Picture 1: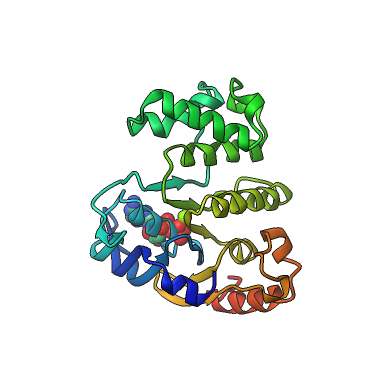
Picture 2: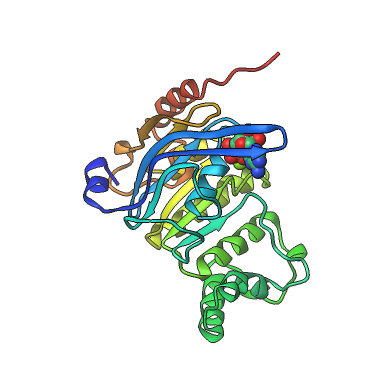
Length: 268
Ligand code: ADP
Ligand code: MG
């Protein structure tokens, strides 16, 4: 999606001057400060920033798991007041329950949200089949590879049919080859289903490959440092997959710019 197309679509998620402080026994931690950003319907945004800059905190706020200390978070133009069915959350670890079958794991979110059981089951079976897991529905998680488990986690997230999917470093437990392949699959699925997606990662290549736009957060307290539109004009009309993006001529330019923005320093 280009800038104009994004601008023409209504904002699905909006953060206005959002700040978050944690209050703990060791005192106060300012995790986020003055974050303002909008994500258009159907847009795929990656957020990158160093460890501890508040990325997971930001997603928890959008998910309604925590409330901001200051500012406002809007979903479809209305303030977020708590967890919402329109938002699905996919985490770093797949959090599959080892004693539940793949189908039962996929149904978990739908059961918690009280989706009618038959409809939920039909949708879970449809998603698992579509993601190549049809034969594994009665298996236990430990019988599956890391990449397959991550696809189950995605099926579980999508089983409740959220409009917005939040992904918190969802591939970091995978080896690098599986990681690229799964990122490809998941980006493709989310785009085809027209989801609005916010991916948090510290992997610059992954951020570029998957997103329409990459937002760089500063060190803690996280602020929006810069925003970069990602376009691959050389690849023609269709957006390249994350894997193809790595070979596009524009890729290195984006990578170098984001690398500098991230202020990566080796301590020592
Ligand atoms: P990231 O995901 O970018 O690594 P986090 O959002 O997890 O960063 O954390 C941002 C900052 O807030 C870090 O300094 C972290 O130590 C701190 N933090 C996170 N959760 C809590 C908490 N529950 N209580 C106190 N401090 C926290
Ligand atoms: Mg995190």
